[in-house]
Image (cartoon, rainbow, N blue to C red):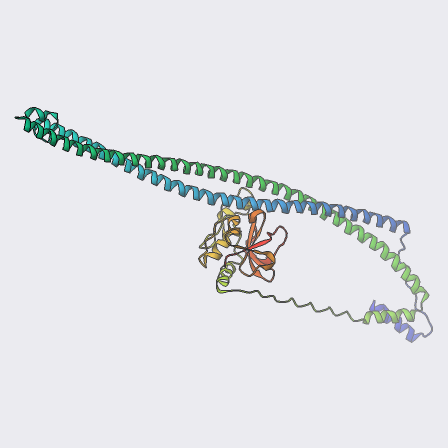
Length: 433
């Protein structure tokens, strides 16, 4: 273009009054061609809009299913905590029952020993014919006075032995009652353990079903996304074609205008266009910095969470001492290798963060939601816990202030700082400090 302008200017200088030759006309597409191109582009745009709506619905359903998976995963955490509690109760009940059985056996032995001593007393009396024996002692009396004395002594000693035997019998009865109560407590504890194990199996089955539904929906969303991407490509091609036709028309119209102008005016306009400076881009606006109130305990909790930024998400991972190997979830977590990778899930990160100030939370966000004082969400402060889902059982994060939070979000991600998501959030935060 610049070379053509130089040639035009040189011609004007050498041959003043001679107009430059106008280049040949560009292609001029017909109105029908342009109209057909626009109709094709409009059809592709409508299809893109239709697929966009379908994808929006599919992604919304996928998000709901993802939330349901998170909820089911936390319920599985709850089942694990409840099962551990039931097992502890069963172990204590078993120990109590064993102690009661031992005490009952000791009491029974005491009764047997007392009976044996009474039998020995009777046998000795029979053999010796003394006043400390059985009824045989009566036959050795030499006088009525001797018979009376022997009778009184035998009755006194016998009553004493029988009273002692009664006391031992009562003790054995009490121990037998304790043994029966301990066995009943053990039966109840075993029933609770069986129920907790069944609840765990049910929770695992529900989690697997939720994971399968999520995976199916993810496949549908991916298929729609693929169709949308393909049609968007076709739309881009159609728009390019229309723009090409319209560009050709515009070029032809411009050629007609150029033809009516003198070559000198065309060269001058070309020179002005070539010398036009580019617009200076506007500077981006600075983002305001927001601070939030904090305290010593709060900062300890926040610091413990922050020190693990970038640590991978691992479902079932994390405890009071730090990140741990996760556990199998039968779906998404397994596909990312959570069960053999060290990391945190959402409630595990909260366990570690608050353990630094002596607060030991259960590994289930639903229990963590009820672990402290509820405050309205708009009054949340740095160090409060934020929750999502029914009863806080879907997800938990630590509020940092200024609309930001730190969380372990989902399998395939890592501990991160993110803006607070208000979709599905509980209306109350939980404050422990």
